[in-house]
Length: 433
Ligand code: EPU
Image 1: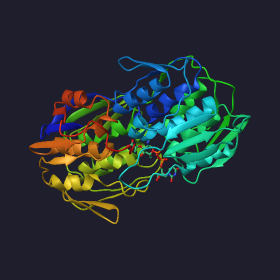
Image 2 (image 1 turned 180 degrees about the vertical axis):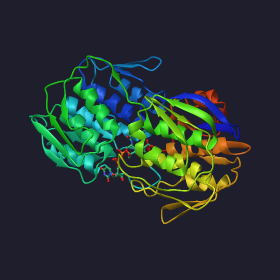
Image 3 (image 1 turned 135 degrees about the horizontal axis):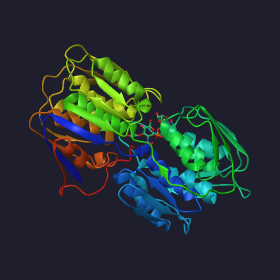
Image 4 (image 1 turned 45 degrees about the vertical axis):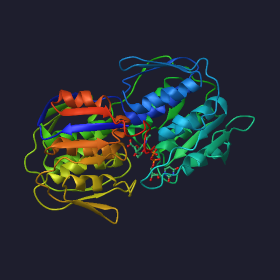
C-alpha cells in the first residue's frame, strides 16, 4: 500500500499540465482490441489503472509499449481468453472488456467487476444492452459469460433506464461490428463518450450522435486503426487543480484543458467568488479572496460531475459565512471523505446523505484514509491546506486516477511524498472507479 505524506500550509504557485482523461483511457484501452492493426494512444496518463489494463492485455497476448505519454497496443496476435479474476477486480472499468471482447470475438468471460463500499453500482443496463443485441448472458461463479448467437450480434434499439456512461460505452463497443443498426436512447452525453466514438470512427466504425442522448451505430465488418488518437484532457483532474488553486494557490495556471467540459464546475467555483481567467487551452486561478458558500447538486453531464463533489468540498470550508450543501444525485452515499475531513478539524457533517459544510478557520494535519480516488483527491487538497503533517493511507487510490501527482504537486511548491507502507499488503482497496 502507499501513503501520501503532506507537510501542509505552503502556498502553491506556478504551472500544471493536465493529463489525458482517465475515464476515456480506461475505455479506449479495452476498445483497442477491436482493431486488427496496432493502435497508438497519445496523452495517456501515468496512472495505476493504465498499468492494470496493460497487464490484462498481456494475458491475451496483446503487446503494449508505453513511452512518455504514448501507448502502443498491438492486438494483431490477440488470443481470446477468459478474464475471470485477479486484476479484473482491481478496477471497475475492466468491465469494458465485456463489450470489447463481445464485439471482437462474439464471446466474453469476465470476472464480476469489483465491489465497493459506498453504495450500489449495478451493471443491469450493460447486460440489458448485450441481450438486446442478441447475446446470452450468464452469471456463473462470480463471472459473467456473454455469448453472441451463431450468426453474430444484430443491431437493436436500446433505451437506457438512466444515461449510464459505462453502459453507453459498453454497448457502443459491442455493437460497432453487429449486423445492422443499433440505436442507444437516453445515452450518456459525457465528453468521454465522444472521445470513444471518435477513436472508433477513425478505425472505420460508423457512430453518429455521440454527445447527444441518441446514438446511432451502423455495424461494420472490422476495424483497423490507422492514425494515432489523442485522448481528451481529464476534466476531473483539471477541476481538482482548480479547487486546489483556489484553496491554497498564490496564482496557478492549469494547462491542457477544454474549458467547455468544465462549464458547470467553473460556474459554481466562480459563484463562490473565485476569479479565473480562461484562454484557449489554459485557466489561470487567482489567489482567492473572501468566498461565499454555495449549494452543489451533482448530475449527469453537462451537470456538476459527481467526481468533482469531493474535490470542491475543501473549498467550501474556506468560505467566510453560511452553510454549504452538497447533494450527490448520482452516488448519494459517496460521502466517505467527510469523517476523514472531520479528523482534520473540518466543521462538516452528513445528514440523510446531504453534506453540510461550515466555515473552518484552519484545518490541522491528521492520519486519514483515502477510501476511493476522489475522496483521496479531497484529502490531498485538505492536507495541502492544513497546518502540520497529514498522512493519507491507501494513497494508491489517488494514484489510480491522478497522473504523476507527486511530481505535479512538487512543481507547484508542495511538500509531498508518496511512499510504500510496509504495514499493508500491496493491493488496491476497492474498484470504485
Ligand atoms: N447504473 C445502474 N445500472 C447500470 C449502470 C449504472 O443503475 O447498469 C446507475 C449507477 O449506479 C449510478 C448511475 O447509474 O447511480 C450512473 O452510473 P454510470 O454507469 O454512469 O457510472 P459508471 O460508468 O459506472 C463512470 C465513471 C465514474 C463516474 C461515473 C458518473 C468510469 C470508469 N467511471 O462510472 O468515475 O463517477 O461514470 O459520471 O468511467 C471516478 O472517476 O472517480 C469515477 C467513479
